[in-house]
Every structure is written in C-alpha cells, then in structure tokens.
Image 1 (cartoon, rainbow, N blue to C red):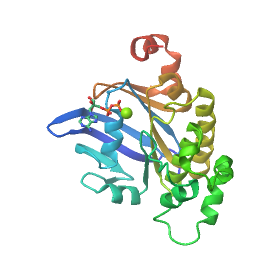
Image 2: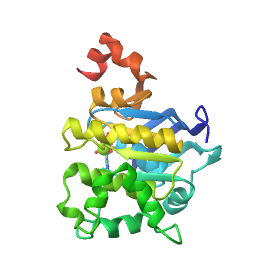
Image 3: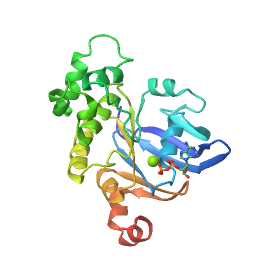
Image 4: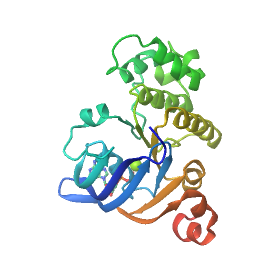
Length: 238
Ligand SMILES: Nc1ncnc2c1ncn2[C@@H]1O[C@H](COP(=O)(O)OP(=O)(O)O)[C@@H](O)[C@H]1O
Ligand SMILES: [Mg+2]
C-alpha cells in the first residue's frame, strides 16, 4: 500500500447509544502509512468514533475503507477486511499467557504462526522474554505491546488505537510509538490513534483532529497545531 493512499474516509458520521447520539456528524480521513490523531477531552466521543468504524455502535453517515463502505457490516467482517482495533483497556486476557493471547490474535491466520510471532518479537523483544508468562503479570507497557502485537497479527491495513498511553509513563509511551513508526513505515499500515494527551498525540502523529462533545472543532497538520500557541491554549489547554 502506497502512502498518500486514502485508507479511511469518514463523512457525516453520527454514532451513539440507544436513543442518543454521542458523535454528531464528523468528517475525517486516515492515509496509509500515516499516523492520524483524534484528540479530545474525556467524554468527547473518541471511543465512540472508533467503535463506529468497527461496527460496534449505532451509526449513520459514510465510512469508506479502501473505497468500500463499511456501514452495516458486522464487526468480524470489518476486522477481516483489514481493520484491527485495540480497545481502551487493551482487551488482553489477563489469565492467559502471552503466547495464548498472541494465538488468539492470529486466529484468522491458518498455518504456521512461528514466522508471524518472530516478526512481532523483532518489534517487541520483551514479548519473547515473557512468552510463557501470564499476561496479567506484565507491566502496563508490556501489556500495551501485547495488545498491539495481537492486532498486528491480523495483518491489518488500518490500526485503531484507543488511548494507548493510558496509565503508562511517558517514556514507555514514546518507546511504543517509536516502534509503531517503524511498523507503519515497514508495513505501510495507517494508524488512527485516539488520545486525551494532546501534546503527546501531536508529537507522534502527522495529522490531527480535535473532537469536542461529538463535533470536530479543529484539524490540520500536527506540527502546525503544536506550533500554534493560540490554538494550543484555546483548544488543547497546554
Ligand atoms: N455504552 C454507552 N452507553 C451510553 N452512553 C455511552 C456509552 N459509552 C459512552 N457513552 C457516552 O458517549 C459520550 C462519548 O463517550 P466516549 O466516546 O467514551 O468518549 P471519549 O472516548 O472521548 O472519552 C459520553 O457522553 C458518554 O457518556
Ligand atoms: Mg475513550
């Protein structure tokens, strides 16, 4: 997949629960080989937006992935089409070993998993050291690495990451994102990362959108937004 390829194009997306909408008609896109950040305070609708892409909540509007509409597709079909979702809380099975968690990640891929696992160990050597250990005993950073490795075993074209920095020390987050950058450059995946931590998210992304109570109030190149003190002060509060 070439960079500059539009992987995901979202238009007029509404998403919500029961009788109410939490996301009120938003437009954004994610390019292949790029990191796009979706910023916003707690409750802004970031998680709901990712859930809408994955077909997990009530949705209206247009969500095109590689030029094909995802609206109305089941979550499993969306995953099979090439979208891997690392949910908030990471979705790790704490009682299972690292190995078992990785096998679950690779469940749609038949045949020998050794080569695939080795590919993940090259990115995340700590997972190899801890392969037989219970996932619940890993550090927070290692658990996030495991969650990402599981998602990558699906060989996605688009990776959705919901607050990967949550509860982690900044240094670990940066380490994880350095690895993510290699992965995206080498494998050409697009990454949509949701973050409350705006300064961090602008640092690790190429493009950013800011959500406020279900609406996009700002968007642009991350470097431009980070540079603009007025924007940062009035919208991002740092
Ligand atoms: N399962 C749910 N049922 C009903 N409302 C929800 C549910 N999850 C989130 N919401 C509401 O949707 C809005 C957006 O939430 P969310 O997408 O989780 O925000 P964020 O991820 O940006 O913190 C909030 O008002 C929240 O209370
Ligand atoms: Mg959230």
